[in-house]
Image 1: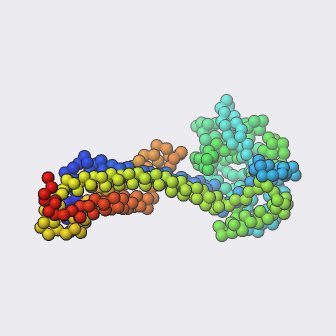
Image 2: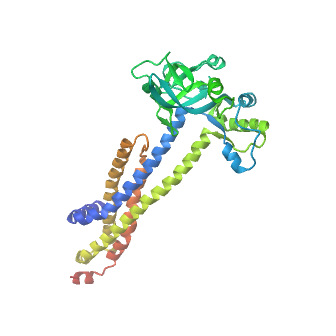
Length: 401
């Protein structure tokens, strides 16, 4: 009975091709919109997770936002920025912390033989090797002796090497950053954009060298720490907070965030966007549902005599109701199938054209959910026309011209 109803529904669709096309178009656009919008959100989510994995695992970020501190209340003249004493305190009083990596950052320009490249100069210690996921293409990383002896060496990003050393091996050669001459000891593999930063433009230098020759002070801009294990990351963050609070009291503007908490916060923001954008697609589906209901009402009017004949030869109200419901769901199902193809194709095209800026990812659950919702729309918006058809009196139907 069901297959016969579906076959008859497809025959009715074929007999009114243009009308059927227009009725399923709204559902197609709605399903496609849901898939595309959610794929963009999921692409962003997967990209953030991948980028966090690129910079390390079990990470804790310790940052002091001076402008935030001044907004919240009194100025804190006694604290300007972190120092090496703070790093030593974290190592001494935080047993759940495995490694601590202080760093400073300065925008700068690198020069070599007339070539110029805008870079991000990052001062680090040898412990950064254990905290950050450095992926060397060639050469070596910074050692403890590089840091302690203030050696003027550097590790350069892939784009820096490509710009300043085209077709050459950079190892052992010099670049100039402001008034500093630095010998290249390592080249990093291509990383691309990570958390909004172009990591291939980074140049890593021993921290004391940057402080002494470019900054003129011993300040540290941020501290990265790595917990002993994923299970201890929250405990390690609490220990760092207590250690710094014991040193400075109620330090406004101090932030101690874990990698996990940041990911959860980003996930909550993306979830809100996903709901909003999915709701927009759902509205398009509802509009398509209204179109299907209108078409089904027209179909009922056109087939009044057919309904009368069926009832006259023994068809019951539920048989007529069932037939029109199946036709409505079939229409929305066809629109849902086209929408799946449309949404998947458009998501792939957006991801292909805008790989770096707007990656996309289509989870299977999104496709199934959008298609199921399309079927539900057909069912809901087909109820009224089906009930109207089922309630028609056979005598009146046979008299209808």
